[in-house]
Amino acid sequence: MWGDRPVDVVRGRIDTTLLRVDDDRYGNDVLSGDWRSRGVKKVRQVPLERDMVLEDPATGWAGAVVRLEAGNVELEDWKGRTRSFPFTGQFLLEGELVTLGRPQAPVGRRASGGTGAAGRSAAAATMAGRPGAAPAVRHASDGGRLRTASGSFAVEQQRARVALPSRIMVEGKHDAELVEKVWGSDLRVEGVVVEELSGVDNLASVLDEFQPSRDRRVGVLVDHLVPGSKESRFASAVMQGKWGAHVLVVGHPFVDVWQSVKPARLGLEAWPTIPRSIEWKKGICQHLGWPYSEQADIARAWQRILGQVRTFADLEPQLLGRVEELIDFVTEPRA
Image (cartoon, rainbow, N blue to C red):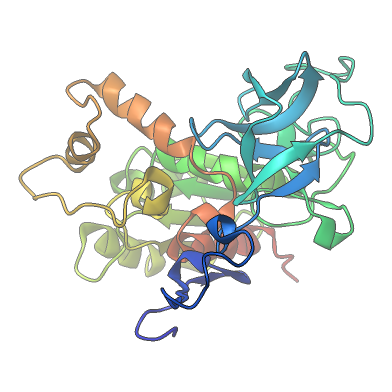
């Protein structure tokens, strides 16, 4: 605790917005030194590097550095789209506001060397650059090694493994896209395929068709897995049923996987409470001032939310732990 407020810690990171420093309003003489800049945090300058992941604070656009040309730095996002920003501007680097210094090595697009978009962020170095997964980030504190969006060290120069017989199943498309963006690189290294259930109601019939076994395990991620919910009843029935020994059902407490994204990434203090009489996703869009009348509006809203997810640190721990648990379950060797 910090005072009367909790300090949010996620895998060793502390939310510094919760730390307060009370300054003495009258403690400094305005005639002594540069009083106008007193107390103002100096923005650090960092040398520009290729594949450095930056975010433009004005637009929220985030991507890896692929080119420096004519005074502009070009960023490529996880979908392979590019956008240029003035080199002299300010950017967010791992959450810190920085300015860019001249690169110590040439920055330019790599020659095309594989399938997909040439020069995709970090693609030539790691599997994290494949479509869907967020680009890997290089941390000086890790000796320059690349980390995937899930926080794992990236396995460099490795092709995806042949798929394991075991599977991870999620309720719907949005769940699958979020898992892919944060854990996609890890899953390809392990050879794990993620499948959509199109609703937890279909779980029993899908398992009957899949026929889990000791060597064909199934991990299931369920939304809104709280006591007394429909989801908890389905999960309990499966775990106690004929496939229970080879199936693990876990879940998060959120109404929808949207809520697993930290609200601060959308400029919110907390996700709004939507009346039960209103469809939840439409209510969220309405609260945010986004279109919501058509299904295409809901799809676009999710892409806006997903676009704000850069690494595991942008997700709530109630989801993080459950996905890691499923990965361990389906990849753990069985004697």
